[in-house]
Image (cartoon, rainbow, N blue to C red; front, side, top):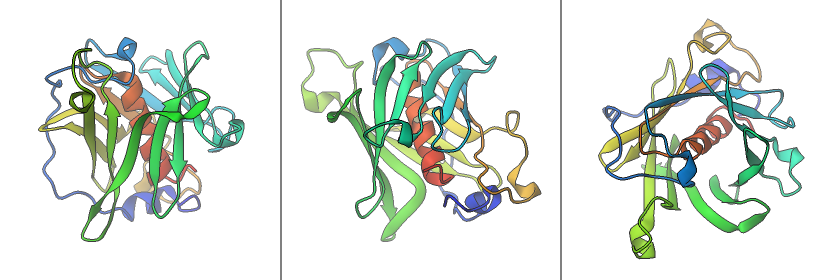
Length: 231
């Protein structure tokens, strides 16, 4: 995928036939880290920088450009992972991608890939992976402390839609609680205007109140890496 054009990367992906849900807040908070739970509807922008291996592979900002997170390229980590850092540069967590048989992902605490806080894997349909659809499972940090571990575990479904533009809905049960989509406003060009080798689109990241923005930013990086070949 790394050498496909932006247009080919999009048009080769079948869209979901499922109807899209409307955005709604979850019925309880959802988080990797409680301090990043949105208290109002929030829009961020994921912007790829340099090559996929650059010291900073992604910047995630508010719409006005205020920094929220940066994500490093893999060669800048001695353990071949992407490092998420806050706006001051402090490490938050790491995203690891595994290639055994099929793609999978894990999110771990900084410097310790065995301290896993989330795992992701593609969903299968008709005996093969549905490209761009995956599940993300994690212990919900926002769950009340008295709950058993199995009651704190949560799985979100990420559903890909669209051909002309790619949309990724983040679904909690019957609710779409966030979405990641190719940005019309922040991209240099639309894919249908012609191929551009190595082009990675900016993505709008929309998060409903009650959802951790760092969690949804992680989903945005996964779909950019996987779908648009930023490996």
